[in-house]
Structure formats: C-alpha cells, structure tokens
Image (cartoon, rainbow, N blue to C red):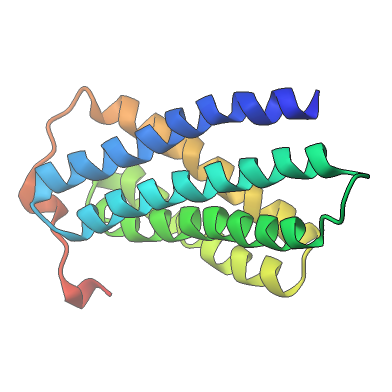
Length: 168
C-alpha cells in the first residue's frame, strides 16, 4: 500500500511541478524579468528532488529487513529537504511578483515569507515546526491556486510586476 501511494505520487509531482513551472514562465512572459526563469528552473529541480525522494522510499520498502537502509535514509533526508527547501525558496522568489499584484497578491507575498522562517525552525527543531512548515507550503499552494483563478479573468500589467535587485 505504501509503494502504491509512492508510485501515485509521481503523478502529483508532475501536476504541482507543472503548475509551479507554468506560473513562473507566465510571470516571466508578463514581466520580462529573468528572476522568474530562475523560479522555473527551481520548479524543475523541486520535481527532480521529489522524484529522487520517492525512489528512495520505494528502495527502502524493497530492502526493508533484507539489507541495511542507513544510506537510503540519509539520501531520503537530503532529497526531502531539497524538495521542501526548494518550495520555500520558490515561493520566496515569487514574492516579488505578488507584491505588485493587487491587495490579494500582496497578502500572498506576505504569507510567502513564512515557509522560509518555519523551514529554518524545522531544520533546527523538527517535530511541530516541521508540521507548521508543511502547512505553510500547503497554504501557499491554496493561495496560488486562488490567485491564478482570479488572475485568469483580469489583465495584469507587466510594468506593475517588475523586479529589480533593489527589491532584495
């Protein structure tokens, strides 16, 4: 049953990763700002880390009881943090777009800081902080979905969504 869920997760990876990639590319098309190409590349990296995470999970269940899994657990931790850390970074990069995207966009931009802060706390003190970190990423996916549906019906001005190094 665990293997079945991990295999089905490959479909989810393609769906959420495709959403992040497409959103990044649309932001680049609207603004011409290359930082969104970085976000697009990061989306591909997040998907790769998630695929590698699932490969480790499948290998662990295959080898459980047959051979030591310490190395696989070490790689699993690495790929898991690359995925979740990448998601926190993706939302942080996209914050610059949201800051200039109306009141709701500014709210999304404000919330996009939480995964970074909670991710640092979760890395230092796993447990509750890890759960809050995951919830903050889930909340941002929900807000990204709502924003995308709302933005479909309005025209965004590329000039209003520009990014400069001064924004850092």
